[in-house]
Length: 95
Image 1 (cartoon, rainbow, N blue to C red):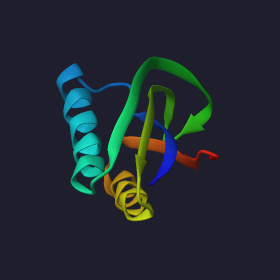
Image 2: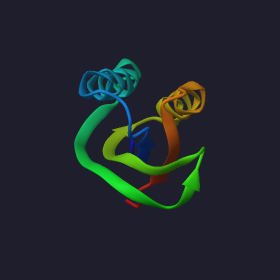
Image 3: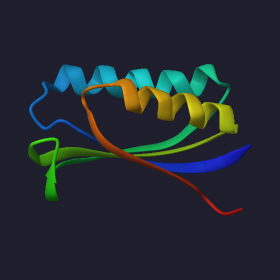
């Protein structure tokens, strides 16, 4: 299994319960694909460098996990179709 680091930005105007639900959804995708969540860091609300989808701020999260590439594909697919995700970046960590 490979290790991945994922930074994703959620809309800043969501309620705390919605953030928790989205985090649980993404962690569930990883665990359903037999991956393992290593670390989840809520960085919090930060100003964006430039406007993205008419937002000047975003709620940042950093997720480290290990899993197969199919887990990453499914996670990326869900990031794309979830309206509350402004941006995301998945990077494979070196061995």
